[in-house]
Length: 160
Length: 440
Image (spheres, each protein chain N blue to C red):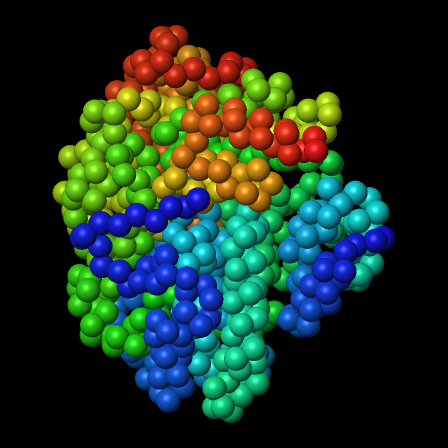
């Protein structure tokens, strides 16, 4: 399985930080997913073999963490927070705008694979609510209008 | 992104270097960086612990436990290595302060971990940052590399003969992992299921070794305590509540933001003066004083000082510093439903009272808000929450139960207004789901 040089360097370095190999599992899975799009059978087998774990042990960990997925998401994963601070400042309206604009529901992916959408729990942007993350990028103090523009920009960027 | 705010009433200690480029080590050094750890290197471990104890620095993650006392529980002699674990898995709804610390002053966290390590004679530390904060992980990894390059970390730090390694670690999305024993499980590469206590982490923690676990803000405060002195720090706050803290004000206010204020600062002033009052000309309905798990205070319960003891006396908790302000256009049934949806989603499912309790609460509150509420549901909601309280494996069950009990108790009239198929008086709509009625 081909992973980037940067991944391999970080992986090798992280292994030296802990007394057990398994300890690198959670952050490594996330970095792996970032490169591969999702944690498919091949990725799970690879990481299990590298860390002397069974594939089942790896799957058990993947299923616990909400950011990890075994199924592909869109190129841009739009994660809208609707927890209390965002709720009070229109987070649900932001989610609704995304649903309407993208034509997909919670956990859905557009047919062209460009966007997926998730209603997520608190992302730590409470004082700048309502907020969302597109992949790892934070977007804050949103309005339905600014979200429309933002999604247009991503679409343009993604089509280039 | 994550814009900084400012108010003349602020007392900047932890936020002193925000917005000044201190993520770069050169700038951090210009701003008194790494002086505290050098001072600590000249102190005996017990002297450091006593200084932190005397400063009345209490855990900023939520529990408010004395940081110095926590450190003192670590055995002096241990056959297994000791560890310092910084909890930067910030995920309590309403809390967004560690984000600013990692962004603007990552070296202060590193320095805090170093001082904690010297105090308990540990040689390894970890800084755990939640997975969603990828850009902050990158800032932290760079800061650690800079500290290593200068010889502040690694073998023989500052030429003292003391070896100390600190590493970054990342999560992948899980609120439960912010609980200290689940945090250790996650760092060991497992599902974040909490461990039974005792033994406490200070005795048996990471890989069986004694482990100190402190919140990122607590650790970022430590260098200031050491440099400024315990007395100075303690005097900033109220008795037994030393220093300042980052209050993350969010929700229905005109000027939300993260403000650093002394412990004991009046909550009413915080909302009306510092945060500019209630937005859109509305009135205040209630305030969650310390993150979504802390019981809500009504508008007439907020003339209190924001320290651990005074908020406790008012029937809530100072918690994580997440002050969520709720205006009078908010439906409290809907609000309770959203809170429980979160805890149900985040419950790890390991213990039955939490798994079943949060699930039944979510079902009942959702059905109730959708117009399918029965009069007996109101008592059932309270009953379900009350029966989780103190009966779960870890504090997540309490965190879910406390806010729901407070909302039912203080806003019962709003529940009654939803009965007999009446539409939500606040015009809130939910999608209709067929959900069962709890029987007991």
